[in-house]
Amino acid sequence: MLLKCLPQISGKIRTPLSDVWITRLKMFRIFGPPGTGKTTTLLNLVDQALADEVPPNQIAFLSFTKKAATEARDRAAKRFNLDAEQDLVYFRTLHSLSYRLLGLRKDQQMEISHFHELSKHLGIELVRSKKEPFVGDGTTLSSSDHPILSLINLARLRKVSVRAQYDQSHLDNVWEEVSYVARAYHKYKKANGLLDYTDTLVMFAENMADHCPRFKVCFLDEAQDLSPLQWDIAHGLDKHSEKMYCAGDDDQAIYRWAGADINQFIHLPGGTETLEQSYRIPRSVHTVADKIVSRITDRYPKRYLPRQEKGTVERIYDLSEADLSHGSWLILTQANYMLDPLDTTLRSMGYLFERPRQRSISEKLSEAVNGWETLRKGNEVSLHTAQCIYAYMSGNGVRVNRGHKKILEDDTTMFTLEKLQKQHGLVASADQIWHEAMDRLPDADRAYIVALLRRGEKFNAEPRIRLSTIHQAKGGEADNVVLFSDLAPAAALDFDNDTHRVFYVGVTRARQNLYIVEPENLHLSYLI
Image 1 (tube, rainbow, N blue to C red):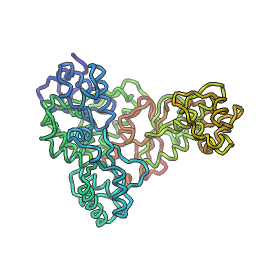
Image 2 (image 1 turned 30 degrees about the vertical axis):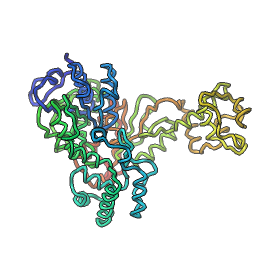
Image 3 (image 1 turned 30 degrees about the horizontal axis):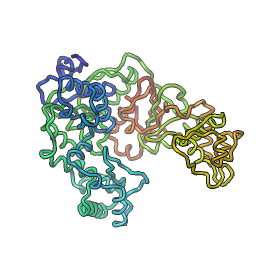
Image 4 (image 1 turned 180 degrees about the horizontal axis):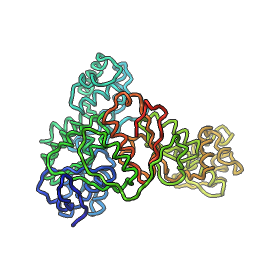
């Protein structure tokens, strides 16, 4: 069955996917430039393996992200009527695979409470954010966001000494402090029998002979993002597999700062295929992308073809020059702090948008506003909606009578305005619109909602606009991309191939139109 053609480079004949599948080569590498469908190609090969009656529990599909691994698992389960949890147990991230095959338990993992305890012991606050900085796939494994512990972790991912990693870092802390924390951290984990994220990878890499099963075929996606430690696991998987397929793109390797080793992917032995045809970017955007990628000096040469559509590339000076009223949008910056003023701008313009893991208007607030207007029209709302409404009302008798803020009813109970007034202490009346009734609503949120309503935005709609750093947008796409060319001072000082790769990724997210925002400071900008 000819599922897809994989074009080859270096004068090789283009080979159907089924021929790639039956190749006698043990290792096969697939280069996939932006939008060429490298993940889809791997999933098609998974289909081929299952169609050839390879037992599902002898197929491994490993990805850098949980999202990609889950997508592959769910697709295979649906197509071949398999149980995703029971049959496709090896569709995971490398960490999740390590955790499972080692038979680790939750109580063996470093939790946020352990970092707090260690902080008290050291007299150094090791957890700077209130939220859990890291949640492992299938575990509750946590990691600290403190720069010293991040450096220690990076050294192990790169398989270098902490001192070597410190010497090439820009860390403000003196070496004596770093060394002290490193020793104390190791001692604490050993004394309490605990493992962190990297410990799990190290343990699996060192004990694969005893814990890794044999696979008929192993698939590895986003291989350009693997660190040397993760590559040790990848090579171990190769030894435990009859066939192995690695897919990635060295031009999109933007995680070297996090330990990624692109050279291992570039120089991987075995067969090689390159997916040439992009199903995403039009010709005008491809011209810009080609200009950027030509600046990268250490890359694997490959042919890359755009869609036939021309598309547009436009240079603007301000976000307001782009008409955001239609289509999907990605608004991209090089650094996270650059997003905050754009957040303010979009709010003032009355656009619904999202940042990574955060909508511009919370589901709670959206439900409260819509729910109140539903009540005013004489319709019913659920218990959850009623609770959201009460959360933005004063409970001192002004909007809700004292003692009634907590609605004691069954989850299945429905409420009318009259019922809330008679049975649950509601004082606010139907004469009051949402911002009058919900008197605890912050002024900034009230102003934003007014702007949304003026523009006609629906609160419960899926946001068309996504505000993101380029790194966070990797793997994503949109009809329109607004790309800011400003650089963070650190990036401007340490300008190298990685900077080219970052902006290459940014440009190649666009399906139709690319808007390049001219920088505020030419000395702190990337020339596109």
